Amino acid sequence: MNIQQYDFSEVSSRWKLLEEQSKNSTFFQTYDFHRIFLNHFGADFNLHVLQITEGEEVIGIAPFVLKESSLEFIVTQPVLGGELVTDYGDIICREGKEKEVWQEIISYAQEKNYTLKLDFIRESSLSYEILCH
Image 1: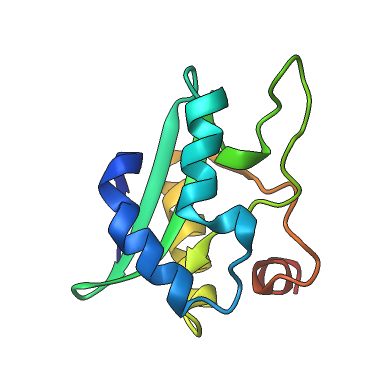
Image 2: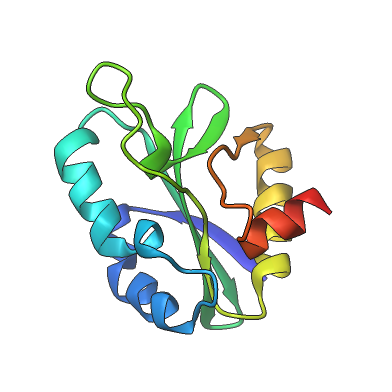
């Protein structure tokens, strides 16, 4: 497996394909929701969008903002003077690859000496189950 950082606009078609292949995807994980959120609120965000591949196949995308040394979900950033306008943050990945994708993200964060701030993951999410058990 491989993990790389990409510009947000570079991953749109792969992200949309993963939306169709994901068991975990909600409206809050869609590319279009992220695009609208960033257009309105993300001018000052230090985006850190990670793409995870297995061979030539993209199996996951992790949409983060880097704040100091903390990786946080893009759409869970406070805006409008501290308001939280999004209910959930999460990765988007191909069904059945959630655990492997999270292992790559955790390894990447450890290697870079980043912390992961994973607020707002739904309790019904596979990510929640993987990370808490």
